[in-house]
Image 1 (tube, rainbow, N blue to C red):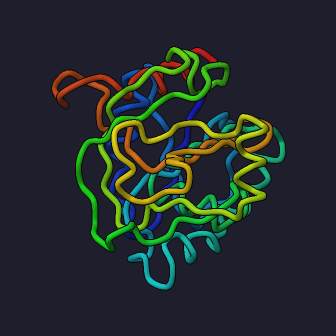
Image 2: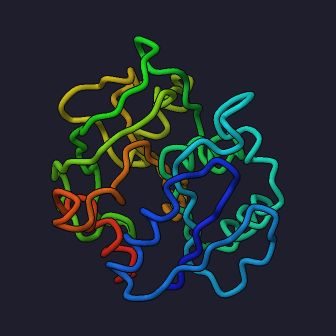
Image 3: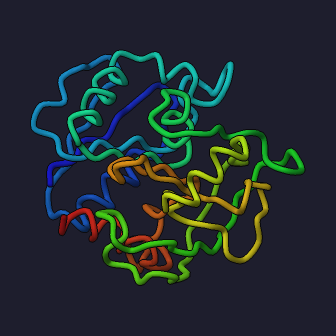
Length: 219
């Protein structure tokens, strides 16, 4: 699987993603500047975390209008894979590729700490190397990670098995139903707030996040 990593002004986790892809895929990902529109040859598009355009207006709102996001929508419509982490998740909701929105954290504080995530299903290309119900550690670093949607949307996500991960230890940011990540209806687009790419090597303090990238590499 050939991966591309989007780069917006203010994004700061692209190097973490490069390392994660390199570790699991054994290949070098392509860095795609936000003004590019050619995603030819890419199977997976990754939108990393950070503060795209300084998070002015709303987190991800300005990045969602970048030329590359029109190409990402086309890529997703063709059945390509998309992974958005933290600010990437916010961008995916702003573009409408994923439902819901990310609001200010409960308590209005920036959260930078480890959290525990529960895998809701392991029959997707993102989670095949995890066990269903497995709990793993992932760092989080966000001020706007409070996932919210109307009750009908939340019920649909639950009923259609589109909840990817839940906060298992403590729902510190106040996300509805402790949702930490969601899928698109075809299970090819995933957005989540915590950072699995920050735990892919023992030198980072653990490899809890590596199975996600190993799953994609094996797809």
